[in-house]
Length: 292
Image 1: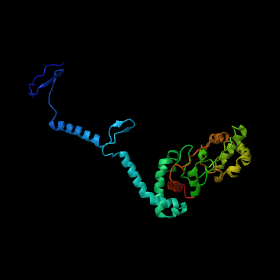
Image 2: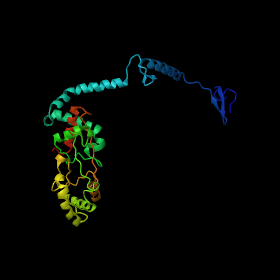
Image 3: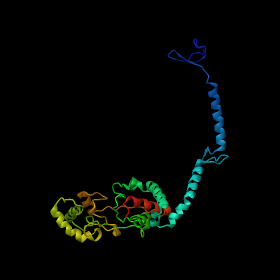
Image 4: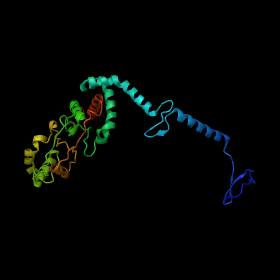
């Protein structure tokens, strides 16, 4: 409880008059160096507030006498880097993809830039290094739904897949909804699903169903996926023989995809990144998949 200030018998220092459980607080002043440092910091902050942007004011802030901002410095540094790359980027814009791949300097630059661009823009869906993830294609296995040549990859990146924004240039295909639209009966879908399983070298759940499904496949599926299930890149029809499944390869997954198929959508990048960057990403993605 509070008491009157008094001199401490041991140290000779006057107390503050505060006491807790018999412990009295000494009234020791702060060191002089600490006090002067505190005052200097206050003076420095006043000068800083005057020279540099510091005080919030609505949606903006005071500009300060110098007008120097971190945002402006970063913008200038980004512009300086862009200016330094302008020459080689223009060379990439003017060269075709095969020419870039044949030029060691351009190709190294393009691959490095493409990897960075891929990480920023494509990896959230396709995974780091094109490893893919559920419902998003792997880009590192050289199995391409729309073709894996440089030009084919660039076309896909430019305009995307099933992208209404570029409906005349985007890749577009739709698998019929054989069950939902009652194009096939449940039994027929079960038969053809069993047959599709055999195309990748696996044993069907029911050989008799698979045998019946082969005829349905020939009538309904072969025109897009090929007589042997080898796929058709021109139509965006996946290869059914390579055991690579975008929406799952178990019998139930295949049956569901025939009944009511899923269709992925990829954005077009022609208006999102620069022409040189489109080529860099195309070359990088092409390098992931085995060089078709």
